[in-house]
Length: 295
Image 1 (tube, rainbow, N blue to C red):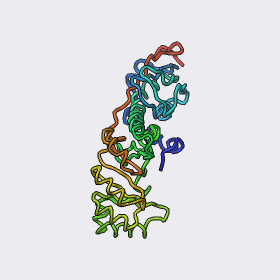
Image 2: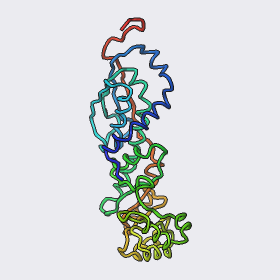
Image 3: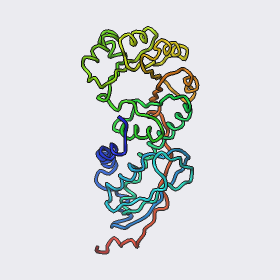
Image 4: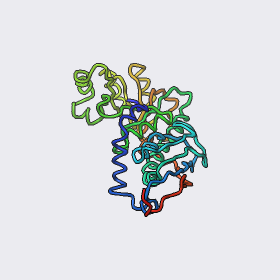
């Protein structure tokens, strides 16, 4: 399942509320101390590193949950390359909400933009090959929808979203069934016919067994380049092929010419550094009320 804007809008609020509740158990003491009453303010969102932006609607939604008067002017959109020092957006709203939501909103935006930036770098290394870069389920708990969306913003493609989204028979499934043939046969009998069946293999013998069992996709897991070349030749177009296992930028150059259809990388979501952004130059747009002045 690809994470679209619509999917994000339908699902993100419950996670954002949990994150805000984690950060604000009863009140934001610091914000309320300096701004006792509502006061509209403005603040800039600035990029402190060059990269690919992702998660702007998530960032904005954090403040919307705190303040129904919040508004944001966008100067770029998800998937755009941004430069260090660039103004990404201009925010307006109740100063207390801007202060209280700042860290939570930035945490999401920085994390998602870091993933998009890393993904874009990896996608660029695969240009001209016809190979599709995939993510995995190696995501942060309760962050999967955001992290997988960020992969697509960076030009990558989502693998299955969760365990309900496709059949992947890994080593322990195969062990439980008694072999690749038995596992594929059981999956064919149980899973809906619209589901493809992917089998993880680690040796050429397992590749041969997966081909004979009729697997739709064969994953070549943690194989060296020479073994993968032999595996692709052995499969000979009878199944789609996916390479996986410690895929890094350095390793991509070795994988370009092997002839696989897909390369999956858990590092896109579990090891991407954040893209540094900050909210700066907050100021009131009206005269703040005295704490003792009646509304």
